[in-house]
Length: 212
Image (tube, rainbow, N blue to C red; front, side, top):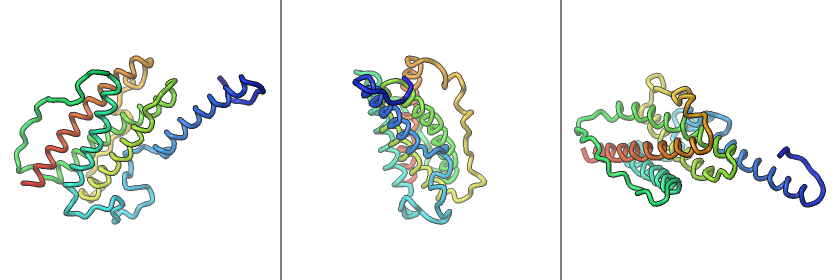
């Protein structure tokens, strides 16, 4: 239905439909700001020496745990919305990590992996406003916001842009970007499931760093 004005009830319906479309697009645009959300997570215009998330350096490990838990909660909610009755907690056993891991090396690795999660979330967000009756935009935008906070904290602690491994959109294969609504709903569910598992791993790992 092309956007435009016609008189009478059909015209009103058309205007309502157009308003809904542009609202969804505005949500995606304002959320992504026309940029890759995993690039410059502290802001495009922020001072590289500033700390926009307001975290003291000695607190960064605790804050990674807190924000990862918050992010995992949103993924859990969306996962349960996709498959009713499916258990919302994954009981997969995580590998037992030794306490002598280097937190900087792990931060570099997690920066790349969480950025990769955002590549997939970005695709889901754009699909949501294209697919009729898409209603995941608000939750996906919350994921983008919280993930960028975590990336910002990691970036500040790593403190060396040259060693950051920043993924491009091609880490998400074309086959995962194509397909009908049913295919994409199944794809999204797997993204939620894998993200929940990864974030639980992050939480457990950084808790061990705190107490090591």
